[in-house]
Image 1 (tube, rainbow, N blue to C red):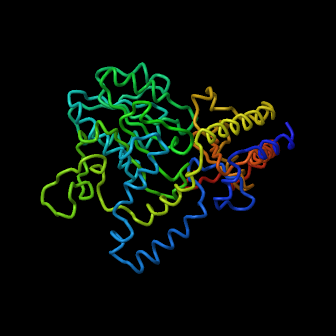
Image 2 (cartoon, rainbow, N blue to C red):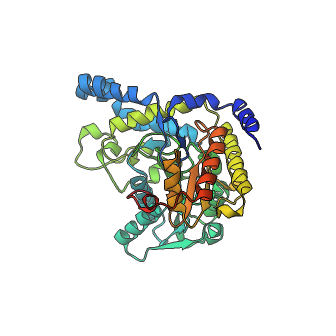
Length: 410
Protein backbone atom coordinates (compact mmCIF):
# COMPACT_ATOMS: atom_id res chain seq x y z
CA UNK A 1 0.00 0.00 0.00
CA UNK A 2 1.67 3.22 -1.18
CA UNK A 3 0.96 6.93 -1.06
CA UNK A 4 -0.35 6.94 -4.62
CA UNK A 5 -3.12 4.55 -3.59
CA UNK A 6 -3.93 6.73 -0.57
CA UNK A 7 -4.01 9.82 -2.76
CA UNK A 8 -6.46 8.12 -5.11
CA UNK A 9 -8.77 7.30 -2.19
CA UNK A 10 -8.79 10.95 -1.15
CA UNK A 11 -9.36 12.21 -4.69
CA UNK A 12 -12.41 9.96 -5.05
CA UNK A 13 -13.83 10.78 -1.62
CA UNK A 14 -17.37 12.24 -2.02
CA UNK A 15 -17.08 13.91 1.41
CA UNK A 16 -13.72 15.60 0.90
CA UNK A 17 -15.08 19.15 0.55
CA UNK A 18 -16.64 19.09 4.02
CA UNK A 19 -13.21 19.36 5.64
CA UNK A 20 -13.22 23.04 4.67
CA UNK A 21 -16.12 23.68 7.03
CA UNK A 22 -13.99 23.11 10.15
CA UNK A 23 -11.23 24.94 11.98
CA UNK A 24 -8.44 22.38 12.16
CA UNK A 25 -5.05 23.39 13.60
CA UNK A 26 -2.23 23.20 11.10
CA UNK A 27 -0.05 20.13 11.54
CA UNK A 28 -2.61 18.27 13.67
CA UNK A 29 -4.24 14.97 12.75
CA UNK A 30 -7.39 15.07 14.84
CA UNK A 31 -8.54 11.58 15.82
CA UNK A 32 -10.50 12.56 18.92
CA UNK A 33 -13.76 13.81 17.42
CA UNK A 34 -15.49 10.99 19.26
CA UNK A 35 -14.71 12.93 22.46
CA UNK A 36 -14.92 16.54 21.28
CA UNK A 37 -15.68 17.55 17.73
CA UNK A 38 -13.72 20.42 16.20
CA UNK A 39 -15.09 23.92 15.71
CA UNK A 40 -17.26 24.47 12.61
CA UNK A 41 -16.20 27.73 10.96
CA UNK A 42 -19.78 29.02 10.98
CA UNK A 43 -20.15 28.92 14.77
CA UNK A 44 -18.08 31.95 15.94
CA UNK A 45 -20.12 34.31 13.77
CA UNK A 46 -23.38 32.94 15.18
CA UNK A 47 -22.15 33.29 18.76
CA UNK A 48 -21.05 36.87 18.07
CA UNK A 49 -24.48 37.66 16.65
CA UNK A 50 -26.33 36.11 19.58
CA UNK A 51 -24.16 37.91 22.13
CA UNK A 52 -23.69 41.31 20.51
CA UNK A 53 -26.87 41.78 18.50
CA UNK A 54 -29.53 39.64 20.16
CA UNK A 55 -28.53 39.76 23.82
CA UNK A 56 -26.65 43.06 23.48
CA UNK A 57 -29.28 45.04 21.56
CA UNK A 58 -32.60 43.21 21.70
CA UNK A 59 -32.14 42.17 25.32
CA UNK A 60 -35.11 40.26 26.76
CA UNK A 61 -37.17 40.84 23.61
CA UNK A 62 -34.97 38.20 21.97
CA UNK A 63 -37.07 35.45 23.54
CA UNK A 64 -39.75 36.42 21.03
CA UNK A 65 -37.96 38.51 18.41
CA UNK A 66 -35.17 35.98 17.85
CA UNK A 67 -37.12 32.86 18.80
CA UNK A 68 -34.94 31.88 21.75
CA UNK A 69 -37.91 30.16 23.36
CA UNK A 70 -38.25 27.61 20.54
CA UNK A 71 -34.57 26.66 20.36
CA UNK A 72 -34.96 23.35 22.25
CA UNK A 73 -37.59 22.16 19.77
CA UNK A 74 -35.89 23.54 16.65
CA UNK A 75 -32.48 22.11 17.52
CA UNK A 76 -34.12 18.88 18.64
CA UNK A 77 -35.79 18.55 15.24
CA UNK A 78 -32.44 18.93 13.45
CA UNK A 79 -30.97 16.15 15.57
CA UNK A 80 -34.11 14.09 15.16
CA UNK A 81 -33.72 14.01 11.40
CA UNK A 82 -30.20 12.59 11.86
CA UNK A 83 -31.27 9.79 14.18
CA UNK A 84 -34.38 8.57 12.39
CA UNK A 85 -36.84 10.07 14.86
CA UNK A 86 -40.43 11.01 14.15
CA UNK A 87 -41.34 14.69 13.95
CA UNK A 88 -41.74 16.40 17.32
CA UNK A 89 -40.12 13.56 19.25
CA UNK A 90 -36.70 15.06 20.14
CA UNK A 91 -35.87 18.05 22.32
CA UNK A 92 -32.48 19.57 23.03
CA UNK A 93 -31.96 20.15 26.73
CA UNK A 94 -29.70 19.75 29.73
CA UNK A 95 -26.94 17.10 29.75
CA UNK A 96 -27.00 13.41 28.87
CA UNK A 97 -26.85 12.58 32.59
CA UNK A 98 -29.87 14.73 33.43
CA UNK A 99 -31.84 13.43 30.46
CA UNK A 100 -31.05 9.84 31.39
CA UNK A 101 -32.22 10.52 34.93
CA UNK A 102 -35.47 11.99 33.61
CA UNK A 103 -36.30 9.09 31.32
CA UNK A 104 -35.15 6.41 33.72
CA UNK A 105 -37.16 7.84 36.60
CA UNK A 106 -40.26 8.11 34.42
CA UNK A 107 -39.80 4.64 32.91
CA UNK A 108 -39.60 2.71 36.17
CA UNK A 109 -42.87 4.35 37.20
CA UNK A 110 -44.52 2.86 34.12
CA UNK A 111 -43.79 -0.67 35.41
CA UNK A 112 -43.86 -0.29 39.22
CA UNK A 113 -44.12 -4.01 39.92
CA UNK A 114 -40.66 -4.67 38.42
CA UNK A 115 -37.55 -3.73 40.38
CA UNK A 116 -34.59 -4.53 38.09
CA UNK A 117 -32.70 -2.09 35.86
CA UNK A 118 -30.43 -3.87 33.38
CA UNK A 119 -27.21 -2.64 31.82
CA UNK A 120 -23.90 -4.05 30.67
CA UNK A 121 -20.30 -3.85 31.83
CA UNK A 122 -19.29 -2.09 28.62
CA UNK A 123 -21.60 0.82 29.31
CA UNK A 124 -20.10 4.23 30.00
CA UNK A 125 -19.68 4.42 33.79
CA UNK A 126 -21.54 7.73 33.94
CA UNK A 127 -24.76 5.96 32.94
CA UNK A 128 -24.21 3.37 35.64
CA UNK A 129 -23.64 6.12 38.21
CA UNK A 130 -26.96 7.73 37.28
CA UNK A 131 -28.72 4.38 37.64
CA UNK A 132 -27.07 3.75 41.00
CA UNK A 133 -28.05 7.21 42.25
CA UNK A 134 -31.67 6.73 41.24
CA UNK A 135 -31.79 3.32 42.93
CA UNK A 136 -30.57 4.89 46.18
CA UNK A 137 -33.41 7.37 45.96
CA UNK A 138 -36.03 4.77 45.09
CA UNK A 139 -35.10 2.14 47.68
CA UNK A 140 -37.95 -0.37 47.77
CA UNK A 141 -35.86 -3.28 46.53
CA UNK A 142 -34.64 -1.81 43.23
CA UNK A 143 -31.39 -3.23 41.86
CA UNK A 144 -28.95 -2.75 39.00
CA UNK A 145 -28.18 -5.95 37.14
CA UNK A 146 -24.97 -5.90 35.09
CA UNK A 147 -24.12 -8.46 32.42
CA UNK A 148 -21.44 -8.70 29.75
CA UNK A 149 -22.26 -6.78 26.55
CA UNK A 150 -22.70 -9.96 24.53
CA UNK A 151 -25.19 -11.28 27.11
CA UNK A 152 -27.72 -8.44 26.90
CA UNK A 153 -30.21 -10.23 24.64
CA UNK A 154 -30.29 -13.36 26.78
CA UNK A 155 -30.60 -11.28 29.95
CA UNK A 156 -33.88 -9.64 28.90
CA UNK A 157 -36.23 -11.38 31.33
CA UNK A 158 -39.66 -10.46 32.64
CA UNK A 159 -38.46 -9.17 36.01
CA UNK A 160 -36.69 -6.26 34.31
CA UNK A 161 -38.35 -2.85 34.16
CA UNK A 162 -35.82 -0.89 32.11
CA UNK A 163 -32.62 -1.61 30.20
CA UNK A 164 -30.09 1.21 29.75
CA UNK A 165 -27.82 0.48 26.80
CA UNK A 166 -25.18 2.60 25.11
CA UNK A 167 -25.34 1.57 21.47
CA UNK A 168 -21.57 1.83 20.93
CA UNK A 169 -19.10 0.72 23.61
CA UNK A 170 -16.89 3.70 24.43
CA UNK A 171 -13.76 1.55 24.86
CA UNK A 172 -13.92 -1.11 22.18
CA UNK A 173 -16.31 0.38 19.63
CA UNK A 174 -18.61 -2.64 19.81
CA UNK A 175 -22.09 -1.79 18.49
CA UNK A 176 -25.26 -3.35 19.84
CA UNK A 177 -28.05 -4.41 17.46
CA UNK A 178 -30.71 -1.84 18.30
CA UNK A 179 -33.48 -3.43 16.27
CA UNK A 180 -32.94 -6.94 17.66
CA UNK A 181 -32.57 -5.90 21.29
CA UNK A 182 -35.54 -3.52 21.14
CA UNK A 183 -37.77 -6.23 19.68
CA UNK A 184 -36.74 -8.78 22.32
CA UNK A 185 -37.21 -6.23 25.09
CA UNK A 186 -40.73 -5.45 23.91
CA UNK A 187 -41.59 -9.15 23.95
CA UNK A 188 -40.92 -9.07 27.69
CA UNK A 189 -42.52 -5.69 28.36
CA UNK A 190 -39.17 -3.99 29.02
CA UNK A 191 -38.47 -0.34 28.26
CA UNK A 192 -35.07 0.34 26.68
CA UNK A 193 -33.27 3.68 26.96
CA UNK A 194 -30.65 3.94 24.22
CA UNK A 195 -27.61 6.14 24.81
CA UNK A 196 -26.58 7.54 21.41
CA UNK A 197 -23.52 9.53 22.49
CA UNK A 198 -21.25 7.53 20.18
CA UNK A 199 -23.90 7.05 17.49
CA UNK A 200 -25.45 10.39 16.51
CA UNK A 201 -23.46 11.78 13.61
CA UNK A 202 -21.24 8.70 13.43
CA UNK A 203 -23.55 6.58 11.26
CA UNK A 204 -27.23 6.40 10.27
CA UNK A 205 -29.47 5.77 13.28
CA UNK A 206 -33.08 4.72 12.74
CA UNK A 207 -34.94 5.08 16.02
CA UNK A 208 -38.38 4.87 14.44
CA UNK A 209 -37.52 1.99 12.13
CA UNK A 210 -35.92 0.00 14.92
CA UNK A 211 -38.95 0.40 17.17
CA UNK A 212 -36.98 2.28 19.83
CA UNK A 213 -39.05 4.13 22.41
CA UNK A 214 -36.54 6.16 24.43
CA UNK A 215 -33.10 7.63 23.80
CA UNK A 216 -30.64 10.22 25.03
CA UNK A 217 -27.38 11.53 23.66
CA UNK A 218 -24.81 14.31 23.66
CA UNK A 219 -23.95 16.77 20.92
CA UNK A 220 -20.30 17.62 21.52
CA UNK A 221 -18.78 14.53 19.91
CA UNK A 222 -19.65 13.69 16.30
CA UNK A 223 -22.19 16.53 16.12
CA UNK A 224 -19.48 19.14 16.85
CA UNK A 225 -21.64 21.24 19.17
CA UNK A 226 -18.78 22.43 21.38
CA UNK A 227 -17.53 21.58 24.88
CA UNK A 228 -20.44 20.95 27.22
CA UNK A 229 -22.97 21.50 24.45
CA UNK A 230 -26.57 20.68 25.42
CA UNK A 231 -27.75 17.11 25.02
CA UNK A 232 -30.93 15.66 23.52
CA UNK A 233 -33.76 13.39 24.53
CA UNK A 234 -36.11 11.22 22.45
CA UNK A 235 -39.50 9.74 23.31
CA UNK A 236 -41.57 7.88 20.74
CA UNK A 237 -44.91 9.67 20.04
CA UNK A 238 -46.89 6.70 21.38
CA UNK A 239 -45.27 7.07 24.80
CA UNK A 240 -44.91 10.83 25.15
CA UNK A 241 -48.01 11.54 27.20
CA UNK A 242 -47.41 8.52 29.46
CA UNK A 243 -44.13 10.00 30.67
CA UNK A 244 -44.47 11.84 33.96
CA UNK A 245 -41.39 14.08 34.25
CA UNK A 246 -39.55 13.72 37.56
CA UNK A 247 -38.03 17.17 37.08
CA UNK A 248 -41.23 19.12 36.61
CA UNK A 249 -39.77 22.47 35.68
CA UNK A 250 -41.62 25.43 34.25
CA UNK A 251 -40.42 24.95 30.67
CA UNK A 252 -42.18 21.58 30.64
CA UNK A 253 -45.45 23.12 31.86
CA UNK A 254 -48.37 23.23 29.46
CA UNK A 255 -48.53 27.04 29.85
CA UNK A 256 -45.34 28.27 31.52
CA UNK A 257 -46.27 31.95 31.32
CA UNK A 258 -49.60 31.44 33.04
CA UNK A 259 -47.52 31.02 36.19
CA UNK A 260 -49.86 28.44 37.70
CA UNK A 261 -49.06 27.31 41.21
CA UNK A 262 -49.62 23.67 40.19
CA UNK A 263 -47.60 21.75 37.62
CA UNK A 264 -49.46 20.54 34.55
CA UNK A 265 -47.20 18.76 32.04
CA UNK A 266 -47.32 19.89 28.44
CA UNK A 267 -48.62 17.58 25.77
CA UNK A 268 -45.96 15.71 23.81
CA UNK A 269 -42.18 15.80 23.92
CA UNK A 270 -41.87 19.29 25.42
CA UNK A 271 -42.99 18.05 28.85
CA UNK A 272 -39.44 16.70 29.18
CA UNK A 273 -38.02 20.21 29.30
CA UNK A 274 -37.19 21.57 32.71
CA UNK A 275 -35.33 24.85 33.17
CA UNK A 276 -34.49 27.79 30.95
CA UNK A 277 -32.36 26.72 27.96
CA UNK A 278 -28.77 27.91 27.63
CA UNK A 279 -29.29 30.16 24.64
CA UNK A 280 -25.66 30.81 23.69
CA UNK A 281 -24.60 27.16 23.80
CA UNK A 282 -27.76 25.99 22.07
CA UNK A 283 -27.36 28.61 19.33
CA UNK A 284 -23.80 27.38 18.73
CA UNK A 285 -25.10 23.83 18.39
CA UNK A 286 -27.91 25.00 16.11
CA UNK A 287 -25.37 26.43 13.69
CA UNK A 288 -22.97 23.49 14.04
CA UNK A 289 -25.73 21.13 12.94
CA UNK A 290 -26.06 23.02 9.65
CA UNK A 291 -22.81 21.35 8.60
CA UNK A 292 -24.90 18.20 8.10
CA UNK A 293 -27.54 19.70 5.81
CA UNK A 294 -26.12 18.23 2.60
CA UNK A 295 -24.42 15.17 4.11
CA UNK A 296 -25.50 11.63 3.30
CA UNK A 297 -24.99 9.63 6.49
CA UNK A 298 -24.73 6.44 4.46
CA UNK A 299 -21.67 7.93 2.75
CA UNK A 300 -20.35 8.85 6.18
CA UNK A 301 -20.74 5.24 7.26
CA UNK A 302 -19.05 3.89 4.14
CA UNK A 303 -16.04 6.16 4.54
CA UNK A 304 -15.85 5.46 8.26
CA UNK A 305 -15.44 1.77 7.59
CA UNK A 306 -12.86 2.39 4.86
CA UNK A 307 -10.87 4.51 7.31
CA UNK A 308 -11.17 1.72 9.87
CA UNK A 309 -9.98 -0.96 7.44
CA UNK A 310 -7.05 1.19 6.33
CA UNK A 311 -6.02 1.92 9.93
CA UNK A 312 -6.30 -1.73 10.98
CA UNK A 313 -4.36 -3.00 7.96
CA UNK A 314 -1.56 -0.48 8.35
CA UNK A 315 -1.13 -1.35 12.03
CA UNK A 316 -1.20 -5.06 11.26
CA UNK A 317 1.52 -4.57 8.64
CA UNK A 318 3.79 -3.12 11.33
CA UNK A 319 4.06 -6.58 12.86
CA UNK A 320 3.64 -7.99 16.38
CA UNK A 321 6.66 -6.17 17.77
CA UNK A 322 4.54 -3.02 18.16
CA UNK A 323 2.62 -4.85 20.92
CA UNK A 324 -0.60 -3.15 19.78
CA UNK A 325 -3.63 -5.40 20.17
CA UNK A 326 -6.71 -4.49 18.18
CA UNK A 327 -9.75 -4.24 20.47
CA UNK A 328 -12.32 -3.35 17.82
CA UNK A 329 -12.41 -6.88 16.46
CA UNK A 330 -16.08 -7.02 15.51
CA UNK A 331 -17.66 -7.39 12.06
CA UNK A 332 -18.51 -4.14 10.30
CA UNK A 333 -22.19 -4.17 11.28
CA UNK A 334 -21.20 -4.59 14.93
CA UNK A 335 -18.88 -1.62 15.28
CA UNK A 336 -19.26 2.11 15.58
CA UNK A 337 -16.93 4.77 14.19
CA UNK A 338 -13.73 4.35 16.18
CA UNK A 339 -10.77 2.00 16.37
CA UNK A 340 -9.14 0.98 19.64
CA UNK A 341 -5.90 -0.76 20.49
CA UNK A 342 -4.53 -2.04 23.77
CA UNK A 343 -0.91 -1.54 24.80
CA UNK A 344 0.72 -1.89 28.24
CA UNK A 345 2.08 1.65 27.87
CA UNK A 346 -1.02 3.07 26.27
CA UNK A 347 -1.11 6.29 28.26
CA UNK A 348 2.51 7.27 27.60
CA UNK A 349 2.23 6.37 23.92
CA UNK A 350 -0.87 8.52 23.52
CA UNK A 351 0.85 11.50 25.19
CA UNK A 352 3.79 11.09 22.82
CA UNK A 353 1.40 10.94 19.86
CA UNK A 354 -0.34 14.11 20.95
CA UNK A 355 3.06 15.77 21.26
CA UNK A 356 3.67 14.81 17.63
CA UNK A 357 0.32 16.18 16.45
CA UNK A 358 -1.70 12.95 16.37
CA UNK A 359 -4.57 13.56 18.77
CA UNK A 360 -6.45 10.54 20.09
CA UNK A 361 -7.25 9.65 23.66
CA UNK A 362 -6.56 7.06 26.36
CA UNK A 363 -9.11 5.01 28.24
CA UNK A 364 -8.08 3.06 31.32
CA UNK A 365 -6.60 0.62 31.81
CA UNK A 366 -4.65 0.38 28.54
CA UNK A 367 -6.74 1.55 25.56
CA UNK A 368 -5.55 3.90 22.83
CA UNK A 369 -8.72 5.15 21.17
CA UNK A 370 -9.01 6.89 17.80
CA UNK A 371 -12.21 8.46 16.47
CA UNK A 372 -12.98 8.05 12.77
CA UNK A 373 -14.83 11.19 11.70
CA UNK A 374 -15.27 11.20 7.91
CA UNK A 375 -16.28 14.83 7.39
CA UNK A 376 -12.80 16.16 8.12
CA UNK A 377 -10.46 13.15 8.16
CA UNK A 378 -8.63 12.08 5.04
CA UNK A 379 -7.08 8.74 4.17
CA UNK A 380 -3.73 10.51 4.11
CA UNK A 381 -4.32 11.52 7.73
CA UNK A 382 -4.63 7.86 8.71
CA UNK A 383 -1.54 6.89 6.72
CA UNK A 384 0.55 9.60 8.34
CA UNK A 385 -0.83 8.86 11.81
CA UNK A 386 0.25 5.23 11.57
CA UNK A 387 3.71 6.28 10.41
CA UNK A 388 4.05 8.38 13.56
CA UNK A 389 2.65 5.59 15.76
CA UNK A 390 5.24 3.20 14.31
CA UNK A 391 8.09 5.62 14.90
CA UNK A 392 7.09 6.35 18.51
CA UNK A 393 6.79 2.68 19.42
CA UNK A 394 9.84 1.44 17.51
CA UNK A 395 12.11 4.16 18.91
CA UNK A 396 10.48 4.00 22.37
CA UNK A 397 10.30 7.77 22.34
CA UNK A 398 7.22 7.45 24.55
CA UNK A 399 9.45 6.39 27.44
CA UNK A 400 10.07 9.85 28.85
CA UNK A 401 9.00 11.12 32.24
CA UNK A 402 6.77 13.84 30.80
CA UNK A 403 4.68 11.25 28.95
CA UNK A 404 4.05 9.18 32.05
CA UNK A 405 2.76 12.06 34.18
CA UNK A 406 -1.03 11.82 34.36
CA UNK A 407 -3.15 14.87 33.70
CA UNK A 408 -6.56 15.40 35.27
CA UNK A 409 -8.17 14.54 31.92
CA UNK A 410 -6.95 11.51 29.98
